Image 1 (cartoon, one colour):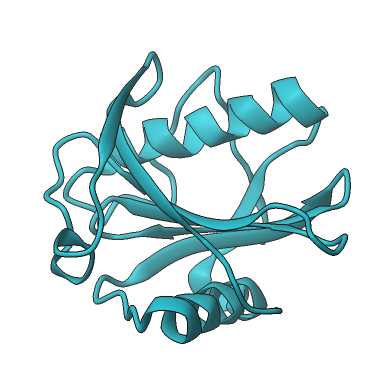
Image 2: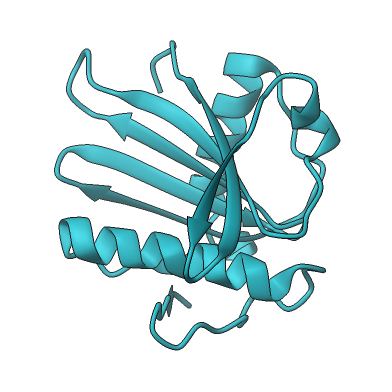
Length: 154
């Protein structure tokens, strides 16, 4: 059942098994606030086992584009479209959040973003390939992020 993420009253619901659950909940709320403010979109997530299409799409892009396999268990995922952009998010038990931004129009922006919750280590599968920049968030503390551009068609 979809869960509407509240960015005013941040909850760890669905993320309790993460060792950085409060920070991951803040990261998830930060994304919800962004989509509400920019696109007037209500950000909802499903348990990963109920969002296999979104999870499979993100997993396929990671594998095909960079041969990346995430070792952490996916807790929640979502996929939606706003203003001609297909978006997908997966929130992992380790505190990692991965999003895919895929503009539907040809020659549009297409990228995979990685965000690390405050307090987590860089996952082994990303450490040697990506540099992570820091940004501050009222909801999530310090977020470290990186990305790569998608070259294929998905």
